[in-house]
Length: 120
Image (cartoon, rainbow, N blue to C red; front, side, top):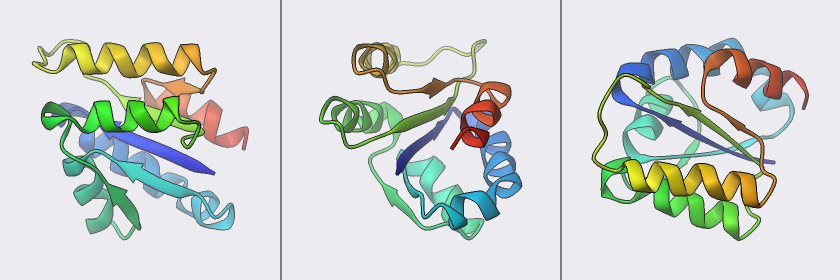
């Protein structure tokens, strides 16, 4: 199973804490993590193996959206900062739309992510 992890700057610490909380499950289920650049670097520092793509503003969200469209990514955990302005908002909207089009589970906050990860 491939899970994409993405987090806006103000949510990166929350994402790493979430991953740490579910590290045993991620390892036991042999989950492959993919991530946008900075989120991936932070996850690696926390001890996770991650396939990293570009940073979100440089096209990483679009790269992951492509993997969703190709049927390669099974779940997206995208901890969004709803109060911040993001120059790559069109890429974010595209990723979310493609998750809907291809029926890929998408969590945009830790509460929903927890429900999805526990359902694996």
